[in-house]
Amino acid sequence: MRFMPQTVVVRRGDRVTWINRDLFPHTVTAAGKFDSGQIASGGSWTYVARKVGEYDYACTLHVGMTGRLEVR
Image (cartoon, rainbow, N blue to C red):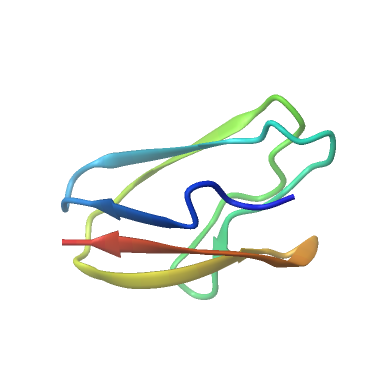
């Protein structure tokens, strides 16, 4: 029920994959930037970091789950 690591640092053009190892579905959502939709238990979602910046994201199903993607 948390993102690990909470902060992910990548370079522009890198692919970032979130893997859901919980028993519940989750999302990876940065409002207006990216949204994984629901990721089922055991599923994954990959995002290509095309723009430099810092993106705070959360699970829309579990609002206490937050993380940050830093693209350099």
